[in-house]
Image 1: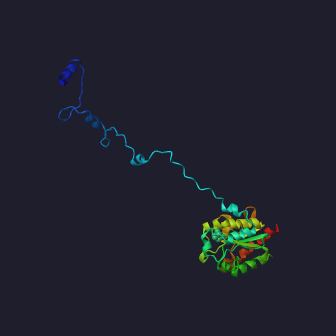
Image 2: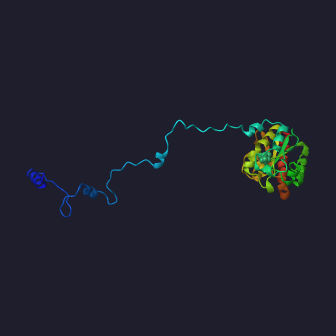
Image 3: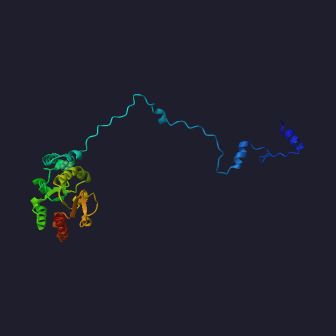
Length: 266
Ligand code: SF4
């Protein structure tokens, strides 16, 4: 209908009509009216084109019957389960041939352990040093002599106790054992403890105490406190090599030895 005729018709019926106009007087289009109603920073909604799938999705071939799950290698028995059943000769043989960590490459020989295999007291140290590596026995040299004197002070000959280390092979340059090395070597010490079945364990030095008791504490904070390895009481004390460098700490080491003696009497 002609716009002029439509307006005359509506006027005759008494109906007012309103049409927005441009400044020049022409009516606004639908889009112009919608844009005028929006805040300046809001655009009128436009219909969205449906997104096309990403290329990588289209490139994945559909599964076929040729797709088969990867075969997992058979689970090997944990080495510790094997070591835990060894007797003394087999255990000593296993340690002497062990290549479970990189320390085997630099050793002259593995240092297994020494002493009474039915001892009431087991002394556990850190790792072989140069002299131990040469002689194949733990706690020799000056530190070993001091340990012997400490044991005698509570009435024990060296041959009456069993002595072993956390590590059986010498770390180069006498550096601290690395956690992975201690972990690899742990089954051997566990088996030694299980075979000896000592009534008391004396852990000398930070490395021995921390690895045996799975702790990060300093020796000074651990000594004097009651610990257990399984059911076995553990006394923590200073390493004889440290006592040689810090003789003022011998008084504390003597207190620890008295604690050992008291436990052995129980
Ligand atoms: S340190 Fe222990 S785990 Fe490492 S090679 Fe020697 S015996 Fe084996």
